[in-house]
Each structure stands twice: as structure tokens, then as C-alpha cells.
Length: 88
Image (cartoon, rainbow, N blue to C red; front, side, top):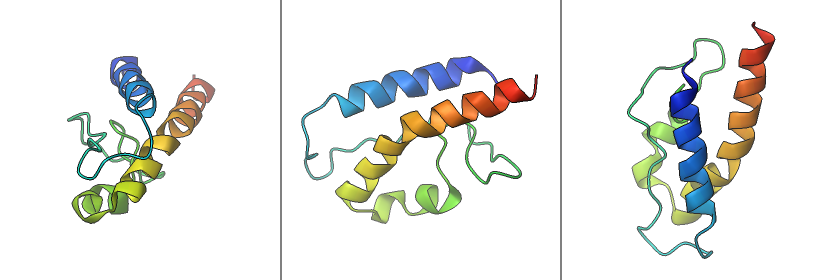
């Protein structure tokens, strides 16, 4: 996987998480990176590291649920990078 997308996702997560909390209604951006490729065994998107239920339910999720996905992205990103390194 190209680190470019993960670096951009990390930057976006850092910027989002630096914003004042709690988030305002309708103020949580989607983590989508326009790289929609599901990991076959882990069941997450390789671009945004969300699961299919998170992706499919994003527009119906509460602001708090959306915020929680962003909170989890740095840890998911760390785990995903470690998994990639272990394959080398």
C-alpha cells in the first residue's frame, strides 16, 4: 500500500482532532480518501481504515459516533502500518 494515502489520512486526523470538542452538529468530515479498496481479511477500507458498517452508516451516524471513528483512526493507522511492515 502506498504510504501517501496513510500520511494524508494521518494529517487529516491530526487536524480534525485538534479542533475544539465536542464537535458542532454537521461539522464532522468524512475520513474518505477516495481510495475505496476493502482489505480482504480485515474488512476495512485501505484508504480511510473504516469498516463497511462505518462507511455505510456514516450519513446516519450521530456526530459523536462520527467523532469516535476519527478518534480511532490514529490507532488503526498505527496497527495497519505495523501489519504492513510485518509482511516485508
